[in-house]
Length: 226
Ligand SMILES: [Ca+2]
Ligand SMILES: [Ca+2]
Image (cartoon, rainbow, N blue to C red; front, side, top):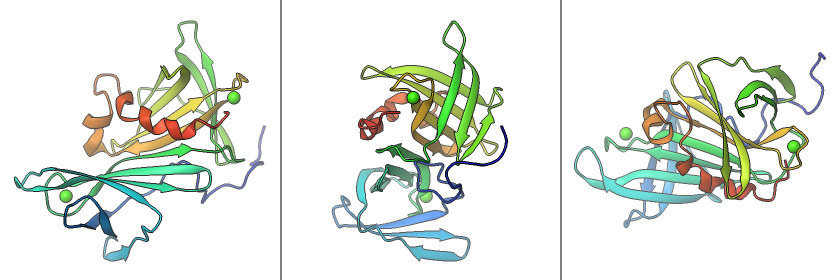
């Protein structure tokens, strides 16, 4: 019952959480605004160039608050051995500084450090208990107003989506599947929504994640048997 056995914890390259402040991001683009050429991250007084060699980017051009046609959103995808990480950065005010709006990590292969949940469901399908194992540690989630659960079906697969409101109004989410029916739900995707972007990604009435923005990312986890 006690002790921290199992996989080593800390510093993992799992599907998230991605931890910590993103800082401010600046990009330079090709003349036609379709390609990211450089990415720079600033935190406090420190600025560093990001190695984007193997990353893929999608840019969205729109009219920013200055009335200028510019790149208002950048989606960056990084592929690692067992996960794909996607981040969305936005610059609605047009000052050239991009803020992290959304991030999602999707498991593409099972590793010994996957996050899992053992959920208990009431007769109506609602979650009544959530025993979470993350980073080799297991704890029972406190089910209060800051946490919500949805059970949903996408392409015939059943997922439990856990959404947690953080103290700074950012939202963390965790999407799990129990493919082999053993009662252990493997987290196939998790990520974070910045408070400023909540209207885009979170249903204000229920606190649930809006799945329309997320479902497409789950395709990357198709090979995982959780
Ligand atoms: Ca900005
Ligand atoms: Ca399972």
